[in-house]
Image (cartoon, rainbow, N blue to C red):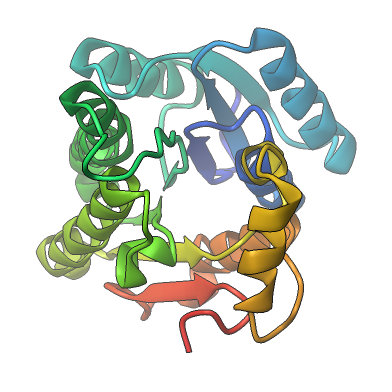
Amino acid sequence: MSNNENNTRVAVVTGGSRGIGRAICIALAKQGKNLVINYAGNEAAATETLNLCKEANPEISAITFKADVSKEEETKALVDAAMNEFGRIDVLVNNAGITADNLLARMSIEEFDRVISLNLRGTYLCCQAVTRTMMKQRFGRIINLSSVVGIHGNAGQANYSASKAGVIGLTKSIAKELAARNITANAVAPGFIATDMTNAMTDTAKESVLGSIPAKRAGNPEEVASAVAFLASDEAAYITGQVLGVDGGMGA
């Protein structure tokens, strides 16, 4: 086990290898939190995230861990690795997520199930896996990544919207269950954020979305990460069961 005598807070971030997840890891490193950076497949990207976190704050310790959080055994292994390395888990950020967009009439059951499995079931499994540890510590911060489409819906994203709406309901329920143990649970709902996922869109599709944003621009991963870092802080102790939109006014 690594030396953690100074009770440095420990954060587990799922889907931490790139995009919003990477920005969240770096923001938490700057806060002084030790990190467990989860990734599904791209070990090189996860290692790059780890190096950027150490660069941002050489004082922190960090490890990477490969796990598919939609699978119970792999989620348990992720949490066990965090406990073996650091002896505690103070912050859980459920960021891992996928899309498989299609119109409802054409969407396959497999496309629906795959998105629900990772985005919603994965969030549930991770939350459940850390609950006992956080209850014993009488401290915890759970931050679940939802989406503006989980609140308002979006054509062609019935599966993704349903998964992210489910994350909000899950978060609010967990918040009520755990508040008395000094554990908060909140959701962050990003709008249109410039990532690999949105870069794959056609220029026409991007223009259409940007036209609907009052701020008239895409957000960046660091702006989402700042919201997550605040909710992960000691200062956010009395905020729980909330959905914080980081969307340039889309949800207004």
